[in-house]
Length: 282
Image 1 (cartoon, rainbow, N blue to C red):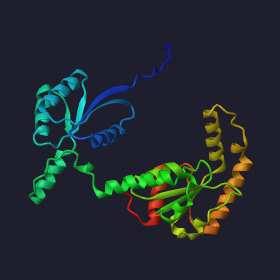
Image 2: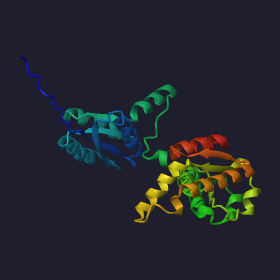
Image 3: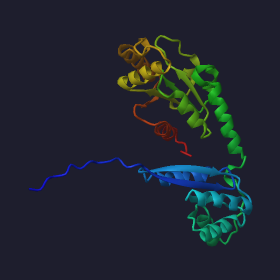
């Protein structure tokens, strides 16, 4: 008689991988691209070490020693003349995997149009007029957050309306980072609605709403985070439904576009707003 052995499944430790991210600028491109690649391997726990503003072969030699000690993979976005080639050669000699994230694209474009690249580090982050417009939009969003000054409605590219916890401020800042001037107004039942709101083109007004149960959960968690009783008027389901109904009536009166943010990320909601306004996503 053959006895069956009980199989015990042991949870294995996640595989670990060190990644050295090297750049002759701030390194944000290398970080984002490497993150995107590693997201394809959820069973691996990545450890990122970022090394920005690398501008000499001596610094590269120093970082290669670190990568070798940690058995790391190197990803880099070096565009300064000669640095990328030097890193690739030295890494190969040491048996280190080094992945050039930018040179293949630069070389392909250079070859097609018979043009020489500038080899300028940080060219993507020039302090252009568009950059300063973004800073201005961020300042605008902060200045006209939570209906602080209704006069901002008349200058805004878009106005966000919504009851508490419908992501007005995060969406405002996200859009501001895309050079959109945003003002927002909390909607509270029986509260005064500024006259300036009725002077704005309805297309510029976005009404944000949410599902009652989702709002209930969010508000309860917020109260718990403050160390307070989660069961208050703020999180009461009937009160939430009343707030949502009041907001919906206002949106109908204004004739504005309405978005339900329940289970939507900030990025998804912002994309819907940009599409409604006919603006570029980027």
